[in-house]
Image (cartoon, rainbow, N blue to C red; front, side, top):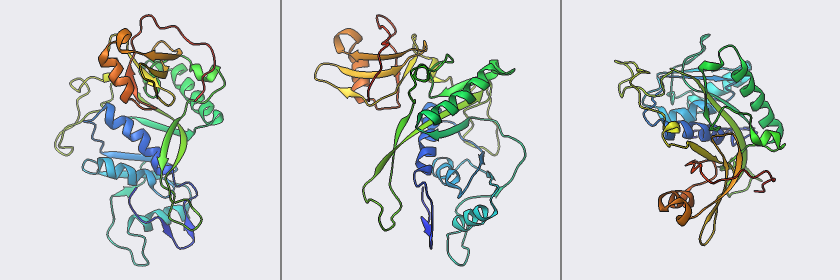
Length: 290
Protein backbone atom coordinates (compact mmCIF):
# COMPACT_ATOMS: atom_id res chain seq x y z
CA UNK A 1 0.00 0.00 0.00
CA UNK A 2 1.34 3.39 -0.94
CA UNK A 3 0.31 6.42 1.06
CA UNK A 4 0.80 8.06 4.45
CA UNK A 5 1.42 5.56 7.21
CA UNK A 6 0.30 7.66 10.16
CA UNK A 7 -1.29 10.94 11.16
CA UNK A 8 0.27 12.26 14.33
CA UNK A 9 -0.48 9.86 17.17
CA UNK A 10 -2.84 7.76 15.03
CA UNK A 11 -1.51 4.54 13.54
CA UNK A 12 -3.02 1.35 12.22
CA UNK A 13 -3.02 -1.44 14.86
CA UNK A 14 -2.84 -4.04 12.09
CA UNK A 15 -0.20 -2.99 9.55
CA UNK A 16 -0.58 -6.29 7.71
CA UNK A 17 -4.24 -5.69 6.77
CA UNK A 18 -3.27 -4.35 3.35
CA UNK A 19 -0.92 -7.29 2.75
CA UNK A 20 -3.71 -9.76 3.60
CA UNK A 21 -5.93 -8.17 0.98
CA UNK A 22 -2.99 -8.16 -1.43
CA UNK A 23 -2.61 -11.92 -0.94
CA UNK A 24 -6.23 -12.56 -1.97
CA UNK A 25 -6.17 -10.14 -4.89
CA UNK A 26 -2.92 -11.66 -6.14
CA UNK A 27 -4.69 -15.04 -6.29
CA UNK A 28 -7.41 -13.51 -8.47
CA UNK A 29 -4.91 -11.73 -10.71
CA UNK A 30 -2.85 -14.91 -11.30
CA UNK A 31 -5.89 -17.12 -12.01
CA UNK A 32 -7.75 -14.49 -14.07
CA UNK A 33 -5.12 -12.12 -15.52
CA UNK A 34 -7.64 -10.38 -17.81
CA UNK A 35 -10.04 -9.59 -14.98
CA UNK A 36 -10.50 -5.82 -14.89
CA UNK A 37 -13.04 -4.83 -12.22
CA UNK A 38 -14.94 -1.58 -12.46
CA UNK A 39 -16.26 -1.40 -8.91
CA UNK A 40 -14.76 -2.26 -5.53
CA UNK A 41 -17.07 -2.93 -2.58
CA UNK A 42 -15.54 -3.05 0.91
CA UNK A 43 -17.66 -3.74 4.00
CA UNK A 44 -16.00 -2.45 7.14
CA UNK A 45 -13.55 -0.46 5.04
CA UNK A 46 -11.76 1.22 7.99
CA UNK A 47 -8.89 3.36 6.71
CA UNK A 48 -9.47 2.21 3.14
CA UNK A 49 -6.55 -0.22 2.87
CA UNK A 50 -8.50 -2.42 0.44
CA UNK A 51 -8.95 0.58 -1.86
CA UNK A 52 -5.22 1.35 -1.81
CA UNK A 53 -4.33 -2.27 -2.66
CA UNK A 54 -6.96 -2.51 -5.42
CA UNK A 55 -5.85 0.81 -6.87
CA UNK A 56 -2.30 -0.53 -7.13
CA UNK A 57 -3.48 -3.66 -8.98
CA UNK A 58 -6.47 -2.52 -11.04
CA UNK A 59 -6.24 1.26 -11.01
CA UNK A 60 -6.65 1.49 -14.79
CA UNK A 61 -10.06 -0.23 -14.78
CA UNK A 62 -11.57 0.72 -11.41
CA UNK A 63 -14.13 3.47 -11.85
CA UNK A 64 -15.70 3.61 -8.39
CA UNK A 65 -14.93 2.55 -4.83
CA UNK A 66 -17.86 1.62 -2.60
CA UNK A 67 -16.86 1.73 1.07
CA UNK A 68 -19.14 0.80 3.96
CA UNK A 69 -17.78 1.89 7.33
CA UNK A 70 -20.05 2.62 10.36
CA UNK A 71 -17.49 4.75 12.19
CA UNK A 72 -17.65 8.41 11.25
CA UNK A 73 -14.14 9.00 12.60
CA UNK A 74 -12.77 6.20 10.43
CA UNK A 75 -14.51 7.58 7.35
CA UNK A 76 -13.11 11.04 8.05
CA UNK A 77 -9.59 9.69 8.55
CA UNK A 78 -9.81 7.50 5.43
CA UNK A 79 -10.82 10.52 3.37
CA UNK A 80 -7.96 12.53 4.84
CA UNK A 81 -5.50 9.79 3.88
CA UNK A 82 -7.00 9.57 0.39
CA UNK A 83 -6.33 13.29 -0.06
CA UNK A 84 -2.70 13.14 1.05
CA UNK A 85 -2.97 13.13 4.85
CA UNK A 86 -1.92 16.74 5.32
CA UNK A 87 -3.59 19.57 7.20
CA UNK A 88 -4.75 20.96 3.85
CA UNK A 89 -6.49 18.38 1.63
CA UNK A 90 -4.68 17.68 -1.63
CA UNK A 91 -5.74 15.87 -4.80
CA UNK A 92 -7.37 12.48 -4.21
CA UNK A 93 -5.17 9.46 -4.93
CA UNK A 94 -8.16 7.55 -6.33
CA UNK A 95 -11.92 7.82 -6.61
CA UNK A 96 -14.74 8.44 -6.65
CA UNK A 97 -15.55 6.88 -3.27
CA UNK A 98 -19.20 6.62 -2.16
CA UNK A 99 -21.83 4.34 -0.58
CA UNK A 100 -23.98 2.03 -2.66
CA UNK A 101 -26.74 -0.30 -1.44
CA UNK A 102 -26.43 -2.89 -4.22
CA UNK A 103 -23.90 -5.71 -4.24
CA UNK A 104 -21.87 -5.69 -7.48
CA UNK A 105 -21.11 -8.96 -9.32
CA UNK A 106 -17.73 -10.63 -9.21
CA UNK A 107 -15.63 -12.46 -6.61
CA UNK A 108 -16.35 -11.94 -2.92
CA UNK A 109 -13.39 -12.19 -0.51
CA UNK A 110 -13.63 -13.25 3.15
CA UNK A 111 -10.58 -12.76 5.39
CA UNK A 112 -9.78 -14.02 8.89
CA UNK A 113 -6.78 -14.51 11.13
CA UNK A 114 -4.83 -17.65 10.29
CA UNK A 115 -5.93 -19.40 13.47
CA UNK A 116 -8.23 -22.33 14.13
CA UNK A 117 -10.98 -19.93 15.20
CA UNK A 118 -10.56 -17.82 12.07
CA UNK A 119 -10.53 -20.86 9.81
CA UNK A 120 -13.58 -22.27 11.59
CA UNK A 121 -15.50 -19.04 10.93
CA UNK A 122 -14.64 -19.16 7.23
CA UNK A 123 -15.64 -22.81 6.95
CA UNK A 124 -18.99 -22.03 8.57
CA UNK A 125 -19.58 -19.33 5.95
CA UNK A 126 -18.46 -21.75 3.21
CA UNK A 127 -20.82 -24.45 4.46
CA UNK A 128 -23.69 -21.95 4.59
CA UNK A 129 -23.10 -21.04 0.95
CA UNK A 130 -22.75 -24.64 -0.23
CA UNK A 131 -25.86 -25.79 1.64
CA UNK A 132 -28.04 -22.80 0.76
CA UNK A 133 -30.84 -22.62 -1.81
CA UNK A 134 -28.43 -21.19 -4.43
CA UNK A 135 -25.65 -23.73 -3.76
CA UNK A 136 -25.52 -24.87 -7.40
CA UNK A 137 -24.66 -21.32 -8.46
CA UNK A 138 -21.82 -20.89 -5.95
CA UNK A 139 -18.20 -21.58 -6.91
CA UNK A 140 -15.39 -21.84 -4.37
CA UNK A 141 -12.74 -19.92 -6.33
CA UNK A 142 -9.90 -20.13 -3.78
CA UNK A 143 -8.16 -21.55 -1.89
CA UNK A 144 -10.14 -24.83 -1.85
CA UNK A 145 -9.69 -27.01 -4.98
CA UNK A 146 -12.95 -28.83 -4.19
CA UNK A 147 -16.43 -28.41 -2.68
CA UNK A 148 -16.05 -31.20 -0.12
CA UNK A 149 -15.59 -30.75 3.66
CA UNK A 150 -12.26 -29.25 4.63
CA UNK A 151 -9.82 -32.03 5.67
CA UNK A 152 -7.91 -29.70 7.99
CA UNK A 153 -11.09 -28.75 9.83
CA UNK A 154 -11.67 -32.39 10.74
CA UNK A 155 -8.08 -32.54 12.05
CA UNK A 156 -8.62 -29.45 14.23
CA UNK A 157 -6.00 -27.48 12.31
CA UNK A 158 -6.20 -24.16 10.50
CA UNK A 159 -5.79 -23.80 6.75
CA UNK A 160 -3.66 -20.67 6.64
CA UNK A 161 -1.11 -19.06 4.37
CA UNK A 162 1.91 -16.90 5.15
CA UNK A 163 1.96 -13.25 4.13
CA UNK A 164 4.99 -11.02 4.66
CA UNK A 165 4.61 -7.35 5.58
CA UNK A 166 6.73 -4.38 6.59
CA UNK A 167 5.82 -2.94 10.03
CA UNK A 168 4.94 0.74 10.21
CA UNK A 169 8.09 2.87 10.60
CA UNK A 170 7.30 3.83 14.19
CA UNK A 171 9.53 3.85 17.23
CA UNK A 172 9.85 0.36 18.75
CA UNK A 173 8.71 -1.50 15.63
CA UNK A 174 11.17 -3.95 14.03
CA UNK A 175 12.90 -2.76 10.87
CA UNK A 176 12.85 -6.18 9.16
CA UNK A 177 9.83 -7.68 7.38
CA UNK A 178 7.56 -9.89 9.47
CA UNK A 179 5.19 -12.71 8.62
CA UNK A 180 1.53 -13.18 9.46
CA UNK A 181 -0.76 -16.15 8.85
CA UNK A 182 -4.04 -15.44 7.08
CA UNK A 183 -7.04 -17.61 6.20
CA UNK A 184 -9.17 -16.52 3.27
CA UNK A 185 -12.03 -17.61 1.06
CA UNK A 186 -12.84 -16.33 -2.42
CA UNK A 187 -16.27 -17.23 -3.81
CA UNK A 188 -18.15 -16.20 -6.92
CA UNK A 189 -21.44 -16.91 -8.60
CA UNK A 190 -21.25 -19.30 -11.55
CA UNK A 191 -21.81 -17.41 -14.77
CA UNK A 192 -20.35 -14.16 -13.41
CA UNK A 193 -17.48 -12.95 -15.53
CA UNK A 194 -13.92 -12.85 -14.21
CA UNK A 195 -12.66 -11.27 -17.43
CA UNK A 196 -13.50 -8.04 -19.20
CA UNK A 197 -12.53 -5.99 -22.19
CA UNK A 198 -9.44 -3.78 -22.17
CA UNK A 199 -11.84 -0.84 -22.46
CA UNK A 200 -14.17 -0.98 -19.42
CA UNK A 201 -16.15 2.05 -20.60
CA UNK A 202 -17.26 1.07 -24.10
CA UNK A 203 -17.86 -2.65 -23.66
CA UNK A 204 -18.98 -5.15 -21.05
CA UNK A 205 -17.67 -8.65 -20.24
CA UNK A 206 -19.29 -11.66 -21.80
CA UNK A 207 -19.43 -14.67 -19.43
CA UNK A 208 -20.02 -17.01 -22.37
CA UNK A 209 -16.90 -16.03 -24.33
CA UNK A 210 -14.60 -15.33 -21.36
CA UNK A 211 -11.44 -17.43 -21.09
CA UNK A 212 -11.74 -20.75 -19.19
CA UNK A 213 -10.66 -21.02 -15.58
CA UNK A 214 -7.31 -22.87 -15.37
CA UNK A 215 -8.56 -24.66 -12.23
CA UNK A 216 -10.34 -27.22 -14.43
CA UNK A 217 -7.71 -27.72 -17.14
CA UNK A 218 -5.51 -30.65 -15.88
CA UNK A 219 -7.05 -34.13 -16.18
CA UNK A 220 -6.74 -34.80 -12.44
CA UNK A 221 -7.34 -31.23 -11.35
CA UNK A 222 -5.23 -28.91 -9.23
CA UNK A 223 -4.03 -29.22 -5.65
CA UNK A 224 -3.25 -26.39 -3.23
CA UNK A 225 0.12 -26.31 -1.45
CA UNK A 226 -0.87 -25.91 2.22
CA UNK A 227 2.53 -25.78 3.94
CA UNK A 228 6.10 -24.66 3.19
CA UNK A 229 7.69 -26.60 0.32
CA UNK A 230 10.64 -28.76 1.36
CA UNK A 231 13.08 -29.42 -1.53
CA UNK A 232 15.36 -32.42 -1.03
CA UNK A 233 18.30 -33.66 -3.18
CA UNK A 234 16.17 -36.09 -5.27
CA UNK A 235 12.60 -35.20 -4.39
CA UNK A 236 10.33 -32.41 -3.21
CA UNK A 237 8.13 -32.88 -0.14
CA UNK A 238 4.72 -31.22 -0.46
CA UNK A 239 1.65 -30.90 1.71
CA UNK A 240 -1.36 -30.75 -0.60
CA UNK A 241 -5.09 -30.20 -0.38
CA UNK A 242 -6.25 -32.34 -3.29
CA UNK A 243 -9.26 -32.07 -5.63
CA UNK A 244 -10.80 -35.21 -4.12
CA UNK A 245 -11.04 -33.47 -0.73
CA UNK A 246 -8.12 -35.25 0.94
CA UNK A 247 -5.04 -33.77 2.61
CA UNK A 248 -1.89 -35.55 1.40
CA UNK A 249 1.85 -35.51 1.92
CA UNK A 250 3.44 -36.12 -1.47
CA UNK A 251 7.09 -36.69 -2.42
CA UNK A 252 7.47 -35.57 -6.05
CA UNK A 253 10.34 -37.12 -8.02
CA UNK A 254 11.42 -36.71 -11.63
CA UNK A 255 11.36 -40.48 -12.21
CA UNK A 256 7.87 -41.12 -10.87
CA UNK A 257 6.06 -37.90 -11.79
CA UNK A 258 8.03 -36.57 -14.77
CA UNK A 259 10.53 -33.73 -15.04
CA UNK A 260 7.88 -31.11 -15.79
CA UNK A 261 5.93 -31.66 -12.56
CA UNK A 262 9.18 -32.10 -10.64
CA UNK A 263 10.43 -28.69 -11.79
CA UNK A 264 7.08 -27.08 -10.97
CA UNK A 265 7.15 -28.62 -7.50
CA UNK A 266 10.69 -27.33 -6.80
CA UNK A 267 9.75 -23.77 -7.74
CA UNK A 268 6.32 -23.76 -6.07
CA UNK A 269 5.63 -21.93 -2.83
CA UNK A 270 3.24 -22.23 0.09
CA UNK A 271 -0.22 -21.29 -1.22
CA UNK A 272 0.42 -22.08 -4.89
CA UNK A 273 -1.69 -24.31 -7.12
CA UNK A 274 0.02 -27.40 -8.51
CA UNK A 275 -1.18 -29.97 -11.08
CA UNK A 276 -2.25 -33.04 -9.13
CA UNK A 277 -0.86 -36.35 -10.47
CA UNK A 278 -3.81 -38.27 -9.06
CA UNK A 279 -2.61 -41.81 -9.62
CA UNK A 280 -0.84 -43.93 -7.06
CA UNK A 281 -1.04 -41.36 -4.28
CA UNK A 282 -2.39 -42.52 -0.94
CA UNK A 283 -3.98 -40.14 1.57
CA UNK A 284 -1.94 -39.47 4.66
CA UNK A 285 -4.13 -39.76 7.71
CA UNK A 286 -1.42 -38.72 10.15
CA UNK A 287 -1.01 -35.15 11.30
CA UNK A 288 1.39 -33.00 9.33
CA UNK A 289 3.82 -30.53 10.73
CA UNK A 290 4.87 -27.28 9.22
